[in-house]
Image 1 (cartoon, helix red, strand yellow):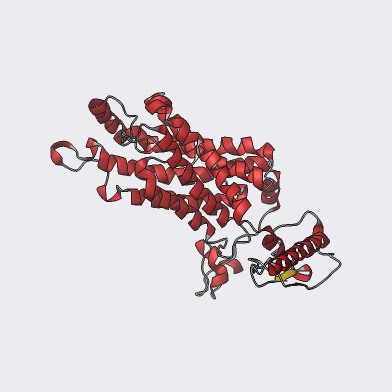
Image 2 (cartoon, rainbow, N blue to C red):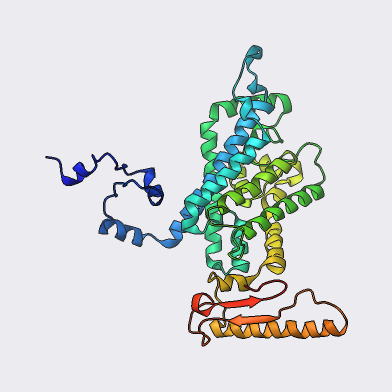
Length: 396
């Protein structure tokens, strides 16, 4: 005789456990519940070392971002820039030309980044870039002791992506390698088979100053957009939109500059460049007057510059404190006193401007405190909210 649970699963309006579990809040029909979580499972999950989980999360996230990206580059290279794409007697060879474009490559990296954030950010925070890890340590208090672990995991994730791609495309890559060697004597050039894995400059790009300038500002653009997406005070960004916005920031730079050679990520370039060195020789690091140092390292100072610019010019921490997303080091009462002081300074500035017949750019004419004035709450939110009403910019 079937159990009651088995009979319940036969109800016409029940939906079996699966992807529908994530949609249960949006469905009116009943979704069959999963089996209860066992004590054994909970104990196992609790016993896992946190740093190991975070490192695996970073490595997996970088893999999710790099693997579809370089696979897209592989289809582009093998379908458009190598004679192996044509075949003998003009017959179709390997590669599908419809999948061979920078537009396709941009989307592959963008969607890969979004999937990486959705899949792994819940475990590690979703850095996926050594430069971003360093910026979190510099500006947001990320523990410095974890920085080497994260960077190693990120490079390892890209390395595994390159290694697995070589296995997936091995026959085609070997055929393309033979053609490159016969035609050019090397595979280390932009459009060569080694460029599937890592970045090389175009033949006419011999001035490393221009290459540095380009890489620096491409990475700075991405850094500012990324930091804005992660700013809790940004009213235009939600948690569900952030992965796609960050991915699109990479995509637009690919569409604009990939034809001119960009890297954007130390882990993405170094991890796959090591694979290129293993299969195609050490020229992967030394060719083009050592261009590899630009593709590997420039994104670090560029991203620090970009995030520093955001912190200095755009960041409004008091809004984040008001929302409860950040905590002021002086506590609830301390932030109230700070707002009083800042408001008083604005009033003095306004009076001085009035004497000079000038209208101040940012005049605060009223500050209202609502809720509990003794500051018993742990943050400025709810009962301890601070509201500034102004003619110009609002504090909260």
